[in-house]
Image 1: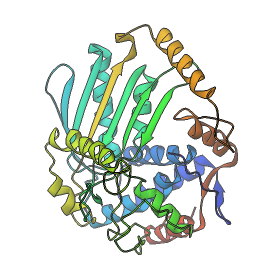
Image 2: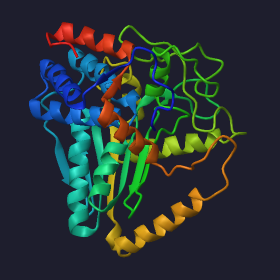
Image 3: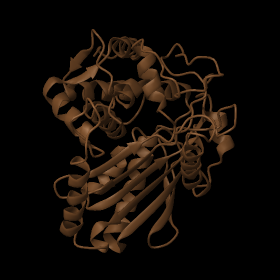
Length: 362
């Protein structure tokens, strides 16, 4: 989801190509191959362009910390095994999650091209960037795209007082005629990166993001959210405002990414701090729209639905109802013109990494 808060004073605009080269150089200095460094940079800069700055260059620390500790494999030997004509399992061999997700969606799309649909569960992986990147790939191939990931030690199940599940994001996309449908969301009230962004920018954490009975959320020395403040599921604490529904969505993602792939939750709990392999799982899907009806007719019905929604009466102070993906498209148009925004705390953190790895500063 696009960051709706105003950019703080002192934010620097960086030409997207320059930011991409800088991200590549940092990753290559950490012994990531040029091919994989380029892919990771693609995903991070794409997030920044779409206004999702919680998952852009600000996330470089996540990868660099774990690469430095040796908990990610820079030379993975990934293995894909077909389970049927339309399903398969990819063992990522502890690869950078973006690298694993790219291979997984490629396999899903290959099956969809031949059989109309493809689904891949991915085991032994790590953070895969923002979920929408992979679902968007499927949409660009005329498919309904599905992209899910689990993690651990971030969110409370309903009525629990400790973190067990992850933010467990999901993205579902569907190509249209005039407007595509592009859902990208966490199953917690907010993504970890949104809290990190708010803390870096000295903004108050809204009620309902984290457990009110836990210590306040804090950033560690590397600018990463600590684990002392459990995030709440969508709907908040308890079941009176629907928190059990968010918990159900989170558990669904956990099972599709974990149980199907054979990567257990306990392994994710052990790896969450960054001192052991992350042990994350993903689930990628691609379904050809043409397998149901002619895509142009599907798109026409989507447009009719969107137009009815847009024409609805607006709440005071609002003159537009957005379809999922539209705010990000607006942000991308602006950021391509002005440059991707990098706030001062992120800029300082990247300068520290550049000095540490012997790379020219951003």
